[in-house]
Amino acid sequence: MRSARPVAHLERRCHYITVIFTIHRLDDDDAPHTQIGVADGGYSASQDSHVSPQYWIEFGQALQSFPQTSKHEALFESGSRAAGWYCYIRLRAYARDMAGHAAFEVEMTNHAEGASHRSSHFHVFCEAAALNRLGHSLERWARSDNPKFEFSDESRDT
Image (cartoon, rainbow, N blue to C red; front, top):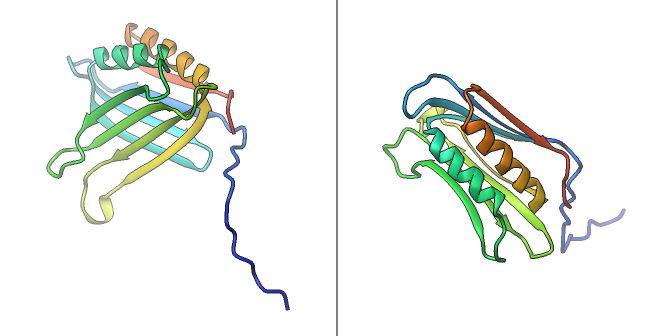
């Protein structure tokens, strides 16, 4: 009988799976009701919120200029982690190193109670250039009248 040896280090391997980022405008108010979704292989998150196009433009611009330093982040937040808010959405691009390795953090929760509660939190390893392309596409979409935004990029990093 062989005994199991403890594993001291597990290496995360990214498979080249398409990351899909979607936004759907559900109405045309000043802060339109939108459905935001991010999927990466077996992990996904989707949450609705009221988000002005200006916030998407600003996030898109921040992603286009990312990264400026090894500590630079591009951040989008809607809602709050605090109880009493409808939901919380956090999308964060951050540099893993200055060689172009980056990650995209996705955190979403609906703040519902009991069996209706939903939350998701994951990180997607990617290249900074893919986040720059996402930012360019996102800004262009936010300035348009198109109700649907979808971005996928197979340029992935391990």
